[in-house]
Image (spheres, one colour):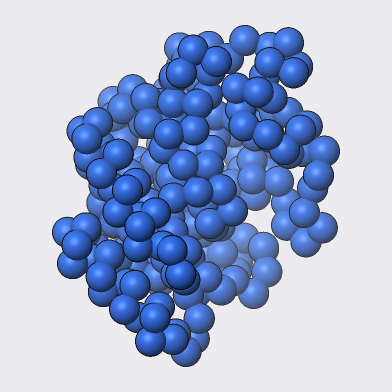
Length: 227
């Protein structure tokens, strides 16, 4: 195992709130006095930054108290899948380098690792997936999902893909949970828990991307139990 204590934050898809959940957990842990390591194997889309949100490795690094360039060993401009971004850049993504980087980042720390897209996203042209990385790291996983329409199917498929590879899924987190959820959202949460045989937590909307705000919302999650 890379770290004695840690979590791998994956998602049902891209743009479901993985980076917010990972950063919130890291910020809450630091606020609790923990020494936190942070890791994201690949960052893409740096050519198309979001105007109000830092890049994923920057956000996670700030919340963990780690230099952003140490969080993600590979960073690419195009907003495409990692294996294509690497191909376009003429770079070979080497699985052992990613695992070694995560090992260093998590040494003596609580490691918060964030994936890229979903579990079946290829990291290499040869078909080494995000799921393979999670297995190599030996960390328990948190699955981040949307609260709205379509999330039941996406989340249950992700749980099957994770468990089929022997990954210990500790919980699902519905990110962007509203103060007054709709009947559908409440039903989605209940149904995922019942059919997926998993704890389903919720993370409210964040009021900004400061470390203090992310630590505040992160503390609404039972991360100590998941660890």
